[in-house]
Image 1: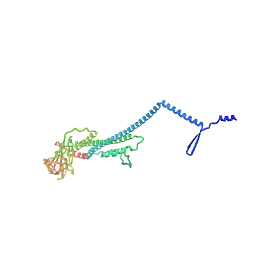
Image 2: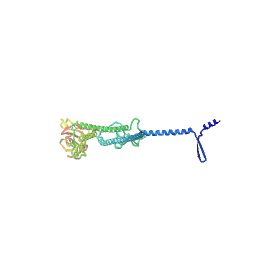
Image 3: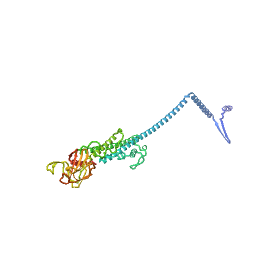
Image 4: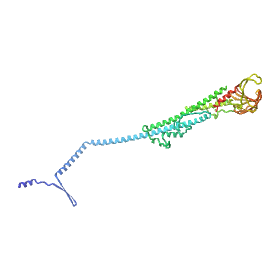
Length: 443
């Protein structure tokens, strides 16, 4: 018993610590067991050891902090470089857009200059075309207009060129064919397989080709009119040469009688001599057409000075030019003209403009009027009953100069009509026949 009590005394269980927490009327207690204390002490020891180890590692390996700072600096530099590259790319895109805009503006300006040049050419060409049309020349073209109204307007102007360029480029806000055009090229619906620059180049090429078509059309009209004027001039000269008269090459004033005005010298008064400017193909073609028209006008003016008219249009021809039996002598004699059946008092007209060189009784001609037409050509009107002009008078083609009769060496009332070339009598029928051939060329 004493042993059991001793054991109890020796093995007396140690009581646990109690943690009492009091807050006002409330009292709380918590029993702190040995394992809990050991666990808390172990955890604190582990944290302390870890902290000390980490601190020691960081103190001993300070290069990690430097590496981290360097890495952060590199990242910052990379971001700054990326921002700089993006800014440079934005600047390049902006510069490219500005350059494209400048190129487009330069191309539009170039096209407008070409259009203005063509408009100026068309104005010059229009004046010559009107002049050619007044001369009886025409141009016929069957070409279909490629672009309206830029390509083949008869009277193009700058506004039509601008409208055509806007139409092709999709500019402006006017409706075309019921659809509203985009306000600018940049807002036009792009083609998936075609870039904006390619589309702009294609449109500018189309407009340029259209302007080239206008230029080719103008050159074709110039060449056609020039060839037509030259052919007409050569045809007139060929017909006149069959009469025995050679038209002089030069100013009409050389052929015109006194008081006549040269058509080619009209408006040319004078001034200091200046070398002509160097012309392009269009200018040379324009000058060639002008020269051809001047030559045509000169040829026609020269032909109008020749006696191609009929002195008595309502009368029949009763006797031709050539050898025949003389009505008074009854033997062969030269009849130096042609006779028109005309009753006494029939009005006789001058067959060409000229100067009266004889008016009155002239031997066997009876009352006769002789007119000098220049270039060695003269006409005689004989057996007249009345003379209505005097020597020195300037007469026009178709002007009444006398009345038919039966004076001089004549067997009855009629008109004896002669044409003399350099004093020698020629057949007037050559000129009357040539007159019908010249009708289509003399406007």
